[in-house]
Length: 205
Image 1 (tube, helix red, strand yellow):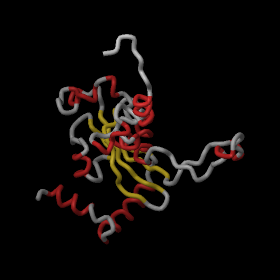
Image 2: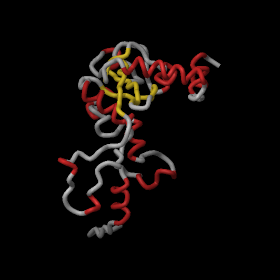
Image 3: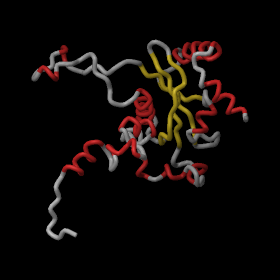
């Protein structure tokens, strides 16, 4: 086994004494820093490399702090008018994950970069910390890399805002295989509508 494989095995036991101590120290350190800041290198190099990170020009890491918990509905004075079914304010959950939210915040902050992927770093009672892999689409080292230059195309602008990253697609329920039959073709609603719409074309084959 290579060095990265040992690190990967270590991270599979997150409640071991070593990692619990490491997470405690790291979350203390990250709490002192800004909510979004650039990291000099990935905290988890093995995970970052698995997700497409390369230690080369044009590829960088941003670390994000996200407050944990559900999403409170933003209503003035807590008064929701209308039916009682819409009166809920407090115990609502955001449809996408905190990791997806972290990618979105970095994407908004760094408009000139493309979000490639992200991963969890550590967490405490109040925050979750994620690292987001970003790519500079105008850098020559990226544009000339055949493994990476797909992200240069304009169609990949702000893929994190349209839930096209791995985290976003997972939250949309999109994937391959028989476990994802209900979302084939784009989304749950689109799939349902296609299967429940009677199409009577003039010239039917």
